[in-house]
Image 1 (cartoon, rainbow over the protein chains, first blue to last red):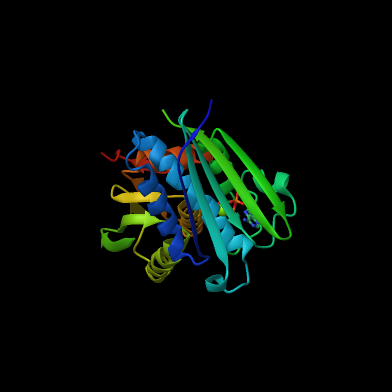
Image 2: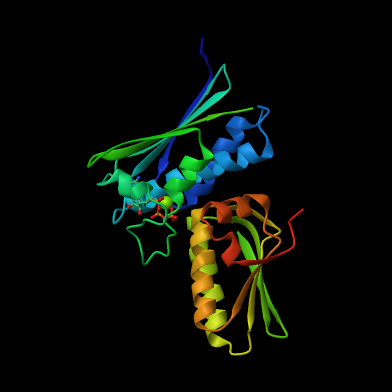
Length: 144
Length: 106
Ligand SMILES: Nc1ncnc2c1ncn2[C@@H]1O[C@H](COP(=O)(O)OP(=O)(O)OP(=O)(O)O)[C@@H](O)[C@H]1O
Ligand SMILES: [Mg+2]
């Protein structure tokens, strides 16, 4: 049976400085676990992508210091790591389009439109729940 | 993220240390573009990535944007010592073969 072994949840302002903060939190959570260098790099990238999307797209046009992003990490007895990133922003109108490589709604920001495809490729599963009241991205990755 | 630039015989090398993410990419882009557009001696833009600890899709956007700008200006773009993590992202985006690289990061 799968049992929870460790969990952490942090809430922070939707400002770009906190993209690095979220990566450091993730690396700290994994510090005592036997993750490979590649797994650690993948997980930092997945978290960075999801947090950046919340800040750039979810809270677009708003004062980020007054908006909250939640990062939750859960580690299970069978080696599964679950990463959840949630915002209370504008939501994704068309998730299927958003998942398409090179799709972006932010052309002038010089975005590549590869964030979600990277999250999908680096995780074992990616689930998105979204509405005009916010977005929750849940990524799972089995650690070796 | 920290960066510094040096130009030698038309090769503009940008040494990038630390993390390239959405937060740091804007500043890096501005200083590269300023240098590139004010110079008419640069024929090669070389991004030195051996000490780049982290890069996500914001860094990919920066690389692809510089590739576009470089081509417009007839400048060659080279990525020096891209780390395995950076190569992985380039490969995933299907642009690995469109971009010239030199050396492996150790
Ligand atoms: N949390 C979110 N809230 C609202 N819209 C989102 C959110 N996450 C993603 N999106 C939408 O999905 C699109 C695709 O996201 P994705 O991360 O793949 O690319 P991007 O962020 O536009 O570019 P990149 O990640 O390469 O810089 C975004 O342009 C945006 O329209
Ligand atoms: Mg993105």
